[in-house]
Image (cartoon, rainbow, N blue to C red; front, side, top):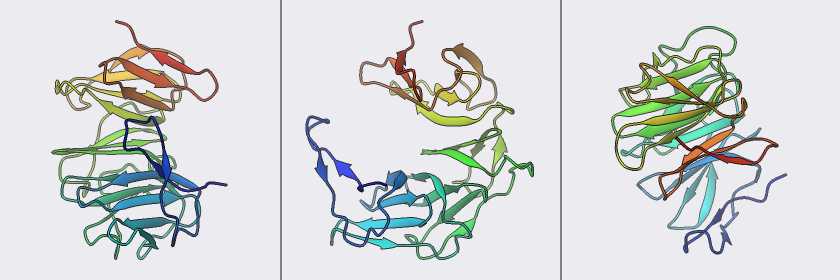
Length: 220
């Protein structure tokens, strides 16, 4: 059982619980904040909720979603929101959640290729992690191109804060991989085999989180 979302205005020194008005399912699996200020939260069984900062309330927005088990959420610079589902692929909305449409063109047809684990929208490119490798989109998530790592579950993405274009992914069977060419090629950085989250800190160091082995820092 979840309790909703918390926010911090002092770099994580303290946290405040956000309003839960309208949030009938508080077991949030993933969320994203759009440039518009609206927040999309994905739950495990109740679909997607949208938070309106003007009225501080949540609205359930599931029209067009065939499945309500949401595993990933992202929002691009145009406030187009995308969600990943347990096994129905990707859906996107251009009208703030009023309608969701399937965005699975280019995804392989294997049983694990539409089981979504991660979504990351960046200027000009969207990264997608599945149970069977990575994909990228160059048109805002409408269509997808394979980005390799087939056979690996891709759980998370991180991007170099220094602007080099380097990206890292955490996988469930090969540790951390990195790419300098938008996923055209990958280099293994090793680490524990099962990595659930990766991030680059403000110190520009790479950190990787595991399920039960704590946190690791990469040192080149």
